[in-house]
Structure formats: structure tokens, C-alpha cells
Image 1 (cartoon, helix red, strand yellow):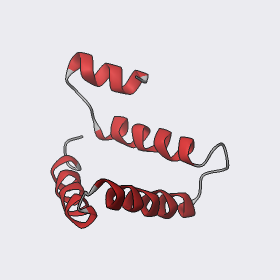
Image 2 (cartoon, rainbow, N blue to C red):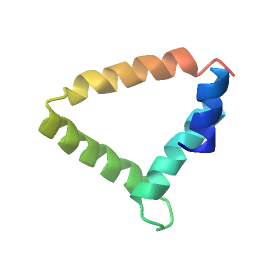
Image 3 (cartoon, rainbow, N blue to C red):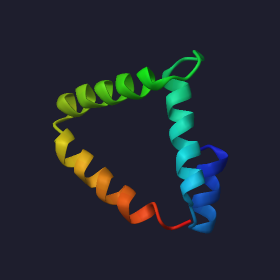
Image 4 (tube, rainbow, N blue to C red):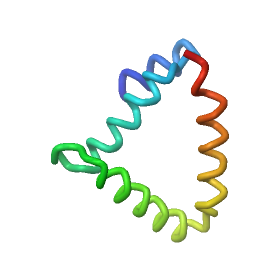
Length: 77
């Protein structure tokens, strides 16, 4: 568990900066050390869609859920 996730688990608090840091860590891991650019976002989303297909998860529904979560969280800070 990374420090951000550990802090959130221990305190129950996670702000938008923490969320962005977790996403950055995911993109950085996905990009395998290459400099981050917009194409990594699209490539990761594409591969997540393949994973959803394989695992029987409705990707479109999860995008809607993510959008709803984002809208609820964006004004918290």
C-alpha cells in the first residue's frame, strides 16, 4: 500500500490532491518510466476497457459512475 492510500485508510480522509497523486502513480507505473504525456491516459483507459470486457464489467457504466464521483468530489477542497 502506498503512503497516500495508507494515510487515507488510517485517517478516513482523502482530498483531491491525494486522488490526483494516486492517479499519477498509476499512470507512471503504466508508462513504465517513460515521460508522462496525454497518450498514456488514452492507452490506460483503452487497456482498462479491455480488462473490463474480459472481466464482464460494463465499462460505460463505470465511466458514468466515475463522472458522478468526480462531480461529487471536485468541490471538496
